[in-house]
Image (cartoon, rainbow, N blue to C red):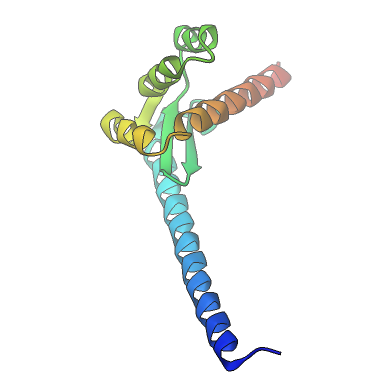
Length: 134
């Protein structure tokens, strides 16, 4: 059994976590809305996933254009270099602007690696899809 004090504590903690969960959910929905707006805004670039890609993260949504062969080679030749990762992201980012993105890269240390990994996975996927069409 719970004492009266424990029941009050239990209720207070449940309320606190429910509020935090709701805030996290609303934040993720906001990011999703921003990502969908980006997709619509940049649809003129071509096919999402092939010509450009919007990625949702806890730090917000980011839109990137397809890299050139030179940009991709520069990244792959220095795959473990943070400088190469940031250079690649800076060269291919469409939205938000480079300065806003750079501020987020500093604020969220794992963001650069997460975005590069996600972009490369999607790039490989789009290449495989294109090869299957041939």
